[in-house]
Length: 137
Image 1 (cartoon, rainbow, N blue to C red):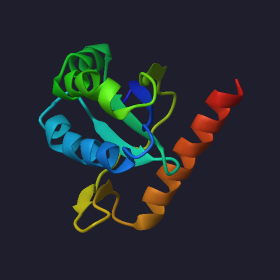
Image 2: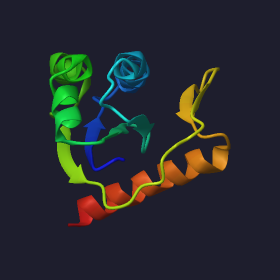
Image 3: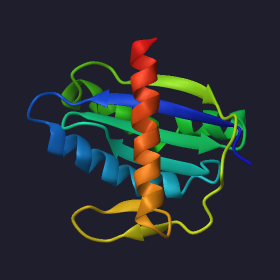
C-alpha cells in the first residue's frame, strides 16, 4: 500500500525543455530497478514546467529513492538543465487506487500509462490541480 510520496517541480532553462524531457524519460529504467518505488511519473505541466511524482509504501522506500541514482542525476544536472533548483516536497498519501495494469506506450510520446488513456489524462489533470493549489498557497 502506498503511504508516502514525493512531488518534484522542475522548471527548464529556456531552450533546455527537450533536454529535461529526455532526462525524465531516461529516469524510468533507473526507478524500475528500485523495489521500494511503487509508482513513478515524469510529467510535463506546461512547455517549460515538468514534474516528478513518485510513491512508496513507507519512509524507507522514499529514503532509498532519495539516495538513489535518479536523485543523484537530478542533483548533478540541476544547474545545467533547470532555471532554479528543483522543488522537492515530501507528501503523505491519504488515498490511492493501485495501478494494476501499467504498460509502457512506445513511440514519440512514450509514457507509462494505465490500460486506457483516460487514466493517464486523469493523472496529469490531477497533478496540474495539485501544482495550482501548491502555488496558490
